[in-house]
Length: 131
Image 1 (cartoon, rainbow, N blue to C red):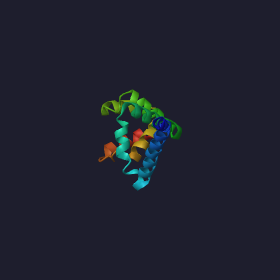
Image 2 (image 1 turned 135 degrees about the horizontal axis):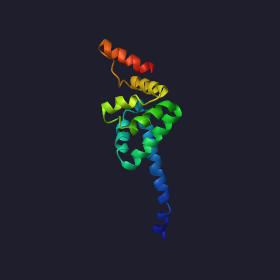
Image 3 (image 1 turned 60 degrees about the vertical axis):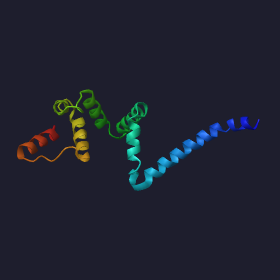
Image 4 (image 1 turned 90 degrees about the horizontal axis):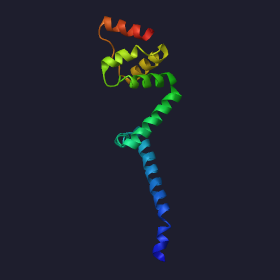
């Protein structure tokens, strides 16, 4: 009889464990701007189910925050620009002006686009920004 009583508490143990994990994530997220949480999230994102869920959440947040950038990123992913730099150049020409502007601003903000070193490269980048 007493052994059967403990089985009733199993859902409480599970909820307590989940609450402990959420509290741990909250604390790790607060410490030094999430420095210790980033490697955990990176490891979790490699798992197929969790990784797809996190990609879907990121894409939805980007669509709410900046629809032009979300459209540009989806077009670039569809054209395979993330894997090949030559495809990236040809894919950039297929973006609309607003999408290109949003993508170039985001790339510049992330530091992905280094400053051109010579005059010809600077002019080419200026022309790409004007389009």
